[in-house]
Image (tube, rainbow, N blue to C red):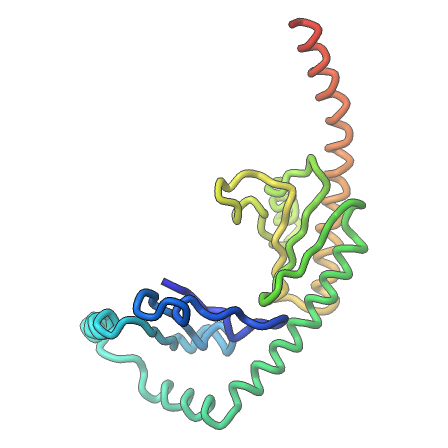
Length: 213
């Protein structure tokens, strides 16, 4: 199963070939127009092995008879005359602007030693904070300030707490985005100061344990 729900919103670089192109007959590929247009569209598509798709279509007819034909007809006109492509150009330009602003704000506002990467394709930043900072604790502190970011540990195989954040720019822009990231940056600087204060005590405890041994 390959879920390409956000493929139309790739803002930087070229998309790699889908798995369905590399292994035809073995991959079911999912796509949607709702993420790039608006959530209420609720229209997507599936491609895959013929027998699987036919059986899935039969189950869909049993479950809901049919999708709204008027909406699908309107989308067909919207896409076929190029309006969807023009819409994507505008959306991608806005996302690139937000990414650039967010990247600059993180580098300016977050503690010394922070790394900020822009993974190709998406509209997120991957932030690596100095060692000793809890990504999950920082996320909770940011939530209390009204700012939502994701802990990097959520994307690790073992979901361990790491000094990382995933920051999306899909919802906020301009001054609101800058203010939100400056707030998270201030919290991150405070977390680094706490980590530095804990470090000597941890070293003292380690030395005491060695002496006892």
